[in-house]
Amino acid sequence: MKLFIFFCLLMTLCAAQWPGNSLQQASEAVKKAKNSVQTILSDLNRSKSSIKRDAEQKIYLYQTQSANQMLNNRNFILNYIKEKREDANKSGKNADDCLDAITNKVNNAYQKEYSSLNQCKNQAMQSIEAELQVLDAQEIIGKKLLNELDRVVLDCYNSNATQMASCIFIKVGYINQRIRQYEQEISQAKRQIQNNQLKILSMQASCNSNAQSRLQTVTSQAIYDTTDCLKD
Image 1 (tube, rainbow, N blue to C red):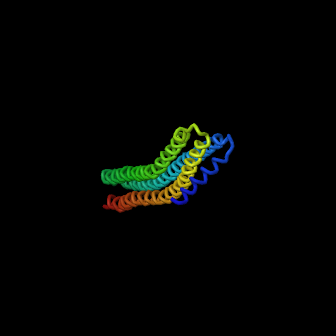
Image 2: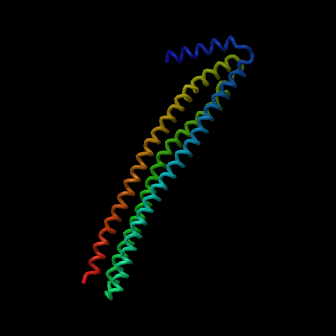
């Protein structure tokens, strides 16, 4: 508080000594502060787009990799069943009904776990969107700072140019302090989002792995069941 009072007194004393262009200098101070906020907002929007794009690419990549592995797993088992069916037919053994049941079981498991992968992806996307809401809130704060700067001249209007300039400089000085704090808060928020993004991707990878494991359990059992179908 003492520092703020000293700052106010200092600005008032300086304003009394400024030449006739003090209002122009005050106006430039407002303009400079607004440019700072606008630059921060532009960087914020670019960061938000970049974070979202990077996260979405990784989320879809994780899903695609897991989906391809599951598809390869399913196709391997289906080809195995097909080969055993052909062997059975050549030997005159009719195991079609039994093998059809196993095939259906594998296909159903694949469809179910593929849907699980989509759920893993959607959950990750929702989590990223929730993280980005922090930056949305920061954008609102920035716009409020711009509105405050737009009101400074009107709030400080005075027929005495020196007093008006002094008022403007004091208000802008206070807002500039908040702008610096605002910039720091955004930097902290972005670092936290990046850390949380790693956790979200890790959770998706774990979710995908669980889906793959469940399908693997079914396909592994299908090998034993196929053997049972071909027993005399």
